[in-house]
Image (cartoon, rainbow, N blue to C red; front, side, top):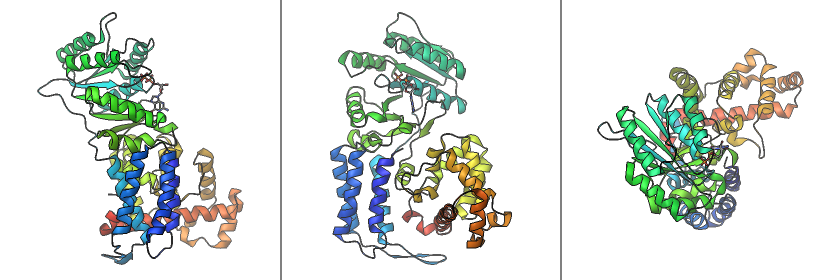
Length: 449
Ligand code: GDP
């Protein structure tokens, strides 16, 4: 996801590499790459203009403190680090702050969650995903099939409800506003904690639809109105969001299909344009492919620094909390071996598409352009690690040229492949060690808080 934007920031970073001083010319040169990539990703022109102006002002205006004292001595901060930090902060500010919690119903009232959005945006699927999330928190949920115009929507929700073991409320022939009111009353009677209304969408916004949604809102006074928008439609998603917000005063967005879109510009513009935050990201069709939106995590990923916090959250969904923390500690201490690394990859493999998970590993910010982290890349890495001795895996520093040759031969790879793997491993370990051991530097290194 967001490869287009990432590419621009990476190019900008490279322009500052090795510089000892930031001049306006160098900054402008770097910002040109960023501007082009943002526009290419379909971020709206005004947002791009303001973002670039803010970064420029800070990059040129601020005095760079190049030596930072830490408990373990001094560390230098280069102009490149400084520029990356500014970009990180501004990206985070652009998309945040976000409170991803849902507003709860007061005094035993079931929490109302009204899903709105255009047809095909992923509303019904996302209603199921939210129900799934609430179920995991031990809540009693009810789904309401109030999309009575799209023929398959009611059945689709019923199937989801059956899979989740959640009742689906529907009354044939009853108008959606009345049906939602009846559903709310039933949920209250049954002491449900939450009721999720899947409302109708259209191919484009029209007045009739908006009036119906306003009537539903008036009838059930939902604590949360969430607009589901398809990331692939870019600036159009932002326009739709603005119009829905004007009529319904929504609480936040869920941006779907981020898994399939390299551009994803809507993620960067929607907050700045509407003033309302993205609360969740849809990252696939399956019911567990819903992520809480964390602007700092996305900013780090865009800048190629991975997202350790996001990674730990993924771990937590699939292994117990203790194991997740132990693994994260290992990564943060820089005290992990190649073997740990491969084990971690094996573990995360269960969690979802590999390439997307790999973006959260800090090391992969350093990968060559157009590198596709897929199963075959993993197989190659595993083959190389497998043809190392135990001692080499535990202490990759000990791998001499002679050994590189042997490992490459054993794995059927080139010596360069082995060296690249070691280089990336070292880069990741280096970054994480700095982060883990120098709390004072945390604020300067994006990615970990
Ligand atoms: P609705 O008309 O708004 O209710 O949309 P649906 O929930 O029926 O979704 C439309 C299509 O988008 C379906 O094929 C879904 O499986 C798919 N979809 C929904 N969310 C996501 C997502 O986050 N990622 C991907 N790749 N597909 C999604």
